[in-house]
Length: 231
Image (cartoon, rainbow, N blue to C red; front, side, top):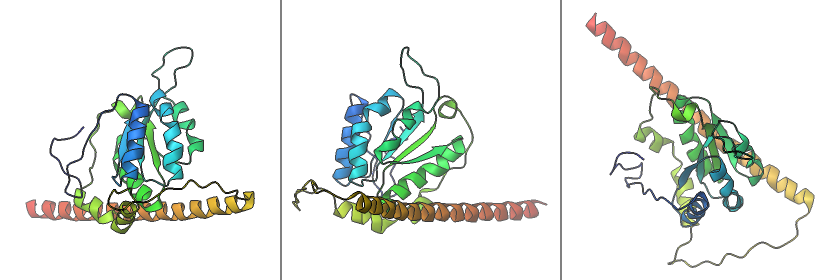
């Protein structure tokens, strides 16, 4: 789970907690997000199905959680560990955004996009990849520097997320919405929310792409300078 004592972009050590089951893990993610902590979890197959009830709540409350899934087959008449997308496809209706990778490098590059877009767009992500090939592959990849990730993070959105968190020093009362909404009004609301989220995702992706090109250009220039010096 990483190097002990390693700190994140906020200068804090990441807390890793192992729950008894995936259902408990999803509940812990929901509670942690509600308390204002940026939270992620990892699962696959039947474990993801156990998280579905909490996925609806997390998406409905617009909490920026990220569920990393190594997509695998669901066990039906027999136990199966083969890689397919039947587990992820069972979560399409939950309201979570879905992002897929097809290589180890894409997992490295797009997972930060899932986290940053979730924070800015207020929509949880199911970030998934092949659970039989990609999840077991050993490959050399280019890693992101923490300073670059910190520069890309929308600190205003993070602060807004924390300001709306449950806090014993600032008591709030959550009242469930029980009013009837017309189908046309609900459709307009969903369309507007989707449009805002797409804009936030595109801006995050564009920023990462530009940053990647800048880093590549700098490394290429340094390599050319080194080669000219050696020659």
